Amino acid sequence: MSQNDLSIANAGGATVRADINSALQALATLSSGSTAPGTTYAGQLWWDTGNNLIKQRNSANAAWVTVASFDGTMYIPYRDGTALGTAATKDTGSGSSDIPTNDGIWTLLSSQSASGTEVDFTGIPSWAKRISVSFINLSLDGPDSIEVQIGDSGGFETSGYNGAYSAIGGSPGAFSSAFQITGTFGASSVAQGGVDISLIVNQSWRVESSIANSASPAIVVGAGTKTLSGSLDRVRVKTSGGVVAFDAGTISVHYQ
Image 1 (cartoon, rainbow, N blue to C red):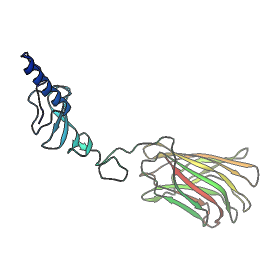
Image 2 (image 1 turned 90 degrees about the horizontal axis):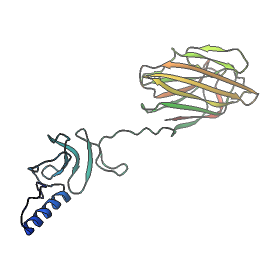
Image 3 (image 1 turned 60 degrees about the vertical axis):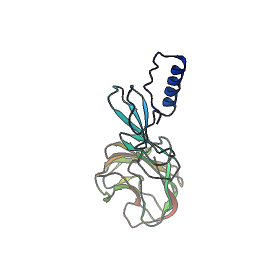
Image 4 (image 1 turned 120 degrees about the horizontal axis):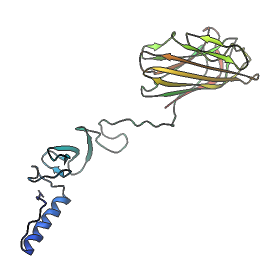
């Protein structure tokens, strides 16, 4: 136990030196002891050895605030009275912490070869604010259009999509059951490009698409919105009629 009132009284040389040494030892050991220092100051630190806690006096010098747990070996920061974790080593210990938002850093969810009439991507984290769907050499085995649907834990939603698409220089078309991102593509068409899905507010999402047909000089652009009932956790790329299938290409989904 190393505690001192941190007030050096007038006295003889040896007494003053001893009092100074005691005060310095108290400062060096955070006034360690199982009971609080008798004299306190705003901002003062105290190592409560009885409870293995580091405490600090509040600005009014009226109470102690727990700032960390420390048993002499492990130091665990606290916030609002709760430990933030049990170790600073990756995948070690347990506890709670804020998840940092890495703005500008994309994480690959999955990359799949396109086949069948639908290609589903699930497991998008609830905190994601942007989703990017990319296509490379995507083609169909017959004439149809390509669509994107989003959904939450209740499944993919098939209504409530608002927006339009158009080939540059062509006539626009509206959609409602999905984000339609191309007009009718023939079997020889090859889609390149992608779809960006961004959170507006709450569970309302904005979609922008830009798809090029590399088999012929054509570009289709689109935009729209969709409000979900829960957190977006899935994306589906599908053919409009559900009969014509994808026969080549790669689809990738990233999020941030």
